[in-house]
Image (cartoon, rainbow, N blue to C red):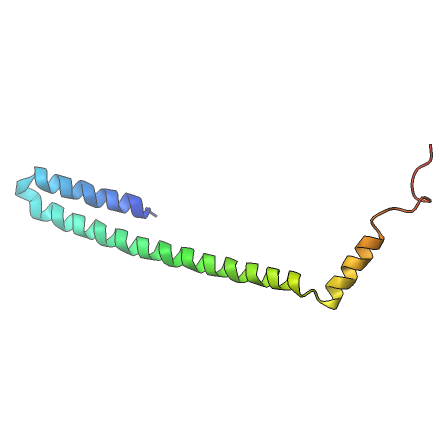
Length: 96
């Protein structure tokens, strides 16, 4: 699948060929319009896709921030249990 840049480049090349080949100018300009239309559609699709990804990432990020500001009881309990278990007891540490 061609990128929007490649489609636009092909349209530009066809316009250049139209100016250099007057006998086939109509054909080259029709081809340029075709590539330009495809490039415009691709650009629209890329923006829509990027917008969708951005919206999903923003939604997920906002949920994460919200969860950090309002921890549930389960989250608070996990944090408490982890803070108690940070330092191992002396009985578990190796002796020299």
